[in-house]
Image (cartoon, rainbow, N blue to C red; front, side, top):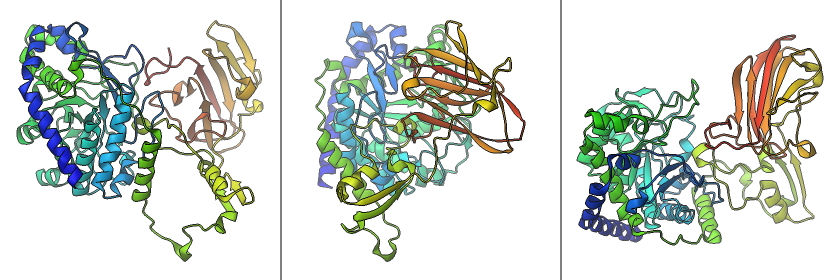
Length: 548
């Protein structure tokens, strides 16, 4: 624990320095127009396209730089490669805060190397619902263990020069209806189970907090004065800023109650019953609300000050710094150490493990991920690794060329193209009618454009027609794409999307590396489905949207 004590003292020194230099922030606030202040309180679209998750424009005339935010529970998620770290739940299984510090330091270095200033991590929600989709991104079901690990990770991230954002505050412990659900929790349970991890991150001097989608005992977490002011600031003394989770802003009054920044800060024309994205509030309405007197400008100043103080603390107001170099080998070694320390062998019948040199000479390797490595989870944790090796290739290399290692897929995840006999164009011809962006049409007997048949880069196409079901049963309809975005609609309703952030694709690609989305449906013999397949080779300007 000696190292952690040292880092804590370092954090205290930084805090004292910031307080001594607050006159600089005062001067900037006095020089900013109301519109410039509000521009720091919501995100915007990064004109360079480099931002991994969010972008906050600066005020160039005053020397306030833009900030880029990226996801990072298990590695830096940008368009560039990064070290794919083991899941945080594996890190917590090591019970080693020193390792958590180095885990965070890897992300901090790599984030700054990619010219990002804010890391949207660590996640410290308690594992309470076993099937919750994001359990792997957080630490554990134990408040004490989670608190120890998150404090160390925050220190590691921030000593590398990157601002840590602890999330999702609070009781965001399952995914089902997470954007609307009201979590009812008594005071003792809140204090003993759900809050300790967040408090530990604040004691470790985290720069930012992300409030959650859900309601807590009535109000939305991002609109709760109890959570954002009474507990976070008055009790814990938090001096950083609070941002919303993406599209989790709900009211202008949240600024008064303790919210500081709305992300991503713009409204997009995408929503679904499972993903109801709230429209932007601060970006669209805050300026007028302040000018009309509905919201006092003092609340704007308070939020801007909180952001600028952290920017000053991390040297962002001192001019552009030289980004650090990434030591790929050293960071890979940390990732491996975490994986080994966090692995838990629950059962080992007949002392099967570890495999001996003799065992390696005769093996059967089963499953699609043996050749298509599943690296990390989806969404915020989807990292593009510097390099990866499949299980099958690693075993073959270890065993040598004389070994007899047999591979069996075990499960067909790819399927086969829908046969021409089941497809009809709107005018009754076999196949589907294809129409290009220029209006030109043709009939395709099969919708299979892989390999040498790949569609031209940047092109856009729509296929329409009907599918007639040959025999009754449960079917899996698949949409598989690469290098663009796609949508499959049945009877006018979109059922599958690929190539965008809110994609329906599996984490496991096809054998030829296509995104692979699947829709299961029970059908009757002779039933007809109206199909529409839309494909665009133009990547979306936002990771959330299909290209228009």
